[in-house]
Amino acid sequence: MTHASGKYADFEALREQAVALRRAGLSLRQIRDELQVHNKETLQRLVEGEPPPEWTKRPRAKDDLRERARELRQQGWTYNQIQAELGCSKSSVSLWVRDLPHPEPKCTPEEQRERMNAGLARLRASREQEREATKWEAAAAIGTLSDRELFLTGVALYWAEGTKDKPHARRESVEFVNSDPGMITVFLAWLDRLEVSRDRLHCRVMIHESADVAAAERYWSDLVGIDRSAMGKTILKKHNPTTVRKNTGDNYKGCLGIKVRRGADLYRRIEGAWYGIVGAVRPDDLSNRT
Image 1 (cartoon, helix red, strand yellow):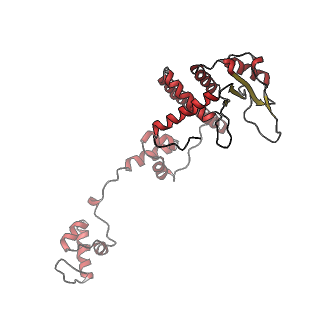
Image 2 (cartoon, helix red, strand yellow; image 1 turned 120 degrees about the horizontal axis):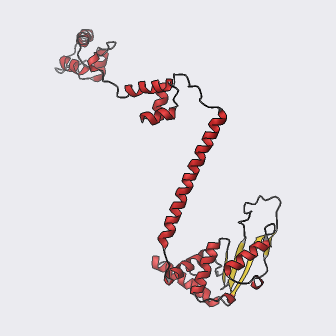
Image 3 (tube, one colour; image 1 turned 180 degrees about the horizontal axis):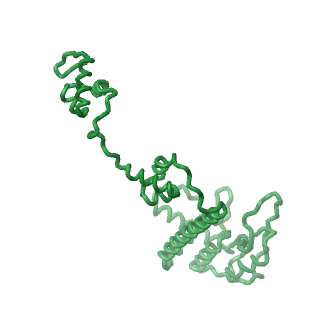
């Protein structure tokens, strides 16, 4: 045991002094300065068993909240209600009141379930409203498309969804298949921009055999703006009884395939335009050329 002077002292004698000072109402810091014992562990051993004086005890900031939480719990409040009332965390509420008996339920299990379901329904409706608002805001921000914007959009759309020529399978033809009527509508507008007349289009429906085939054929022919008789033979997908289909119901219309007759030159222009888009982003990237 060392003092500031560097000399060893008798521990028991030093402890007697420390205890006397502690009982006289001194804090650890005051005892440290009085006895010149600066080792925290040693200082704690010197006053071991002696409670600190009252004046050194700091009031706990959450004591009032704890007492209020216990009062509310005894009145039958739930954790969530106490949390909302006091503005504290739910874990703190649990720590403060967990020894208290649970309040008697104020409604039957059926009523609780009904309230929960109603709350979930309101939450879902609110989220759906938020989703729709975001979509409409984004849609309104687009405004009108210039001819150039429509052209570039159509090129990217085709390169993502259309048939492409490959070194191992040369087929320079323009063929586009999709089930989304919005995609088909944009594709048709793009073809109009490129002055491809409707009589150059060969359209046919591709749909599951268990669907309403006639309704789907009418739907797509109306969307394209051509007579049903001008469309090709519908391709039916055979039903597999072991497969659980999700694309069912009145909204299921299958896919529409559109092929542009005499489209080799148009295909080359599409491919070249796509290279131009890629080159505008990365002039040194020619890896996608076939």
